[in-house]
Image (cartoon, rainbow, N blue to C red):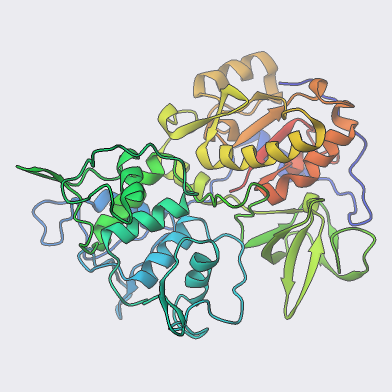
Length: 457
């Protein structure tokens, strides 16, 4: 952990300095960090008991899907919920599943539909528009434009294509011989199916003649839960290949680190103030991020910009899923990803992906990689840090490092240290890449640690 070398208090034309109240200080030092758990949902038509008529071999995966916020099922008249595991997944529902699996990223749908058979009043219009705009779904070309065909059941080969594009169309080594007897190497989606198999999400069906993928078969909702669960375990997250820059995963951001924030007509302090918002106010993000790290938000029918340093998302799906599945400091290495420029440092794969994006921008500007000297810490490493550093280190089992969702930046390796232009640029960019400088660690906070950043995606 770097030595304390805090810059001057963070003051800008769009912020007033505020310190956290003593109660917040007491909470951090005396209790574990707050965990915003996903609401537990129970489905009446799904059971882990083999003797039950509602038994599903994918019950664990269905529960995970619900607690990750990807599905709420159907609300019944008496207040119970059904998942309907054996119903087929329609294409509109597939778009909704993927949008939620991505964490409902910042996105404002255009008023005009990308598909001839989809209207703005259509259920899942936003999710379908998002899938089209990100290239996840291409639809069918017809004389009137393109059709999405929302109520058609999605086939297994189309699902493979959706998931492959969702993951950013990663490079895949395509074998000259198909791993499935019913998928030829000339198949339209051969590469996508091979990729899906390489993640471990599918092995197909074993038959006397070899493995079958059954590309034209439809998918049931319980099988879809299993596919997404396995992809999550493989570290696959939403990563559009066309974007190497900011990818704001939060559709809602909050005023953070200041008591009052000016929202301006453009992305810098040279633009006029449109309005102000107070600490904790929620704002709808459009997804646009300026090169200076400013975030565009929707205000009724108009839009405005706020400094990224004073806006932040709340802990999102990657962290929620980790907390749902593991204990702090006990995340399997297979569920973590190394940084390309420092393979000894591990993070949640989505956090690593967003940091890779930020590092590319940082390297292009300053000719060096972000100097990271700490990322994921096992529980035992947290115990050691506490023994060596005392109260500077979090109580073992409560650190965001133990969730693979925090980094420490070595100021001594940055030109100008924590007061230099490189660090200040980095600090201002965090929100656009789904990171933040926590309140307590800021110069105005009660325990300044300028080196410490936390993931919010």
